[in-house]
Length: 84
Image (cartoon, rainbow, N blue to C red; front, side):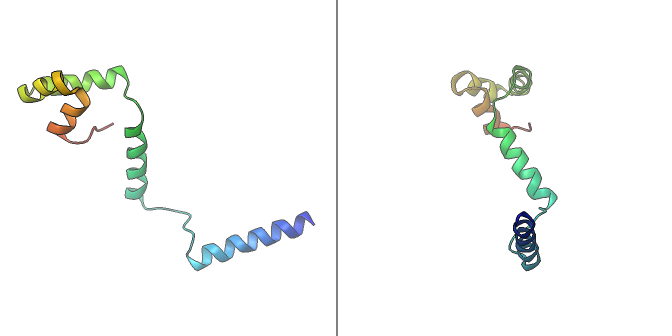
């Protein structure tokens, strides 16, 4: 009975993959975009925040915005998405 269940599940998997409805692999750029989104969702470490602060301090407008809106808002406004 277990063999029959395994056989049926394997045949369903083969049919789905062969029909193209389920993709087992994704393109490299799609995968990197997902990883970037997951990294951005997490909190930044103190070293990463300090690195952003040093970059932002080089620009007077960014530094002023950093004091009022926060480092992440200022960095993204002046330099775009956070690289890590």
